[in-house]
Length: 230
Length: 64
Image (cartoon, rainbow over all chains, first blue to last red; front, side, top):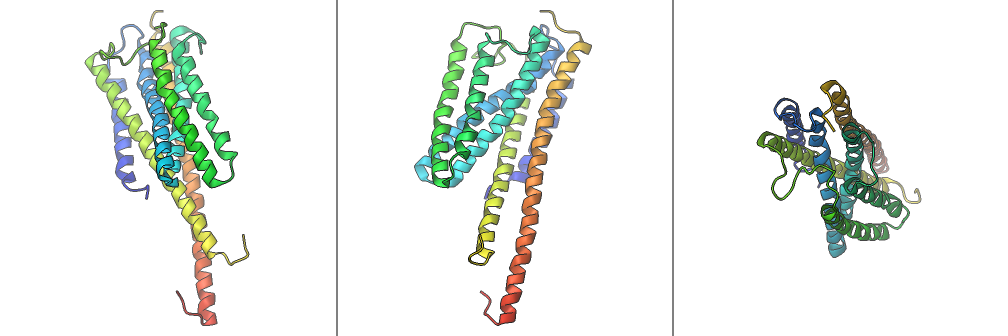
């Protein structure tokens, strides 16, 4: 069900990741202002973009689940949010490493981009206790979808609010004018973004396939076990 | 703030990429363990199904 196309996707992800790394370290020029530490942005920014898109996608899948009642959409939503949280951890750590190198501090509480991402991340950390505190599978799926939709709607609002904030100490990689990246850097950045997106989709499908196999196995066990044995 | 020299900046860049790849490797390792468990359980269920089939054959029941 979920495993269709996973092999070419995995191959494309591996190739694209290798190509991106090659571009980052052998093709993209050194940033005149930041120097070598700017290379962190090729992993940090695509991870942040894909993680935030994953949260929004989780919300959209939650909407489809509530509209159709098909529990597989709840599973899709759950795995998308789960994957985004994993990427979110990488975003926070790589961001802190860059901040230490560039600003001399691991974290700045008056920097809206950092704090807003942390708020989004912590909001989604609540998803797990909410989901797993409900035992009834139907209610669990429904409540989780409602949370995914509400939190998913918060992500673009939060993003827009940060863009409108006055502090501009956090570097802009993308803007309406394409940021300040020269062509080689932009190409490298786009390649990295594609690689991280492919990685997200591949791992999302991989986990869904494993979850589906596990569920089928439980059904098979119930069918095979003699009556009266739980 | 002036750009860090390469030997200084290299540590941070390496750390960022190592963190990213470590997370992915840990995630894939956890998923691989799950897949291995599914494979093990599937083998057990296959054995159980074959055992039940053999018992039904022995008792002379028609096999579905």
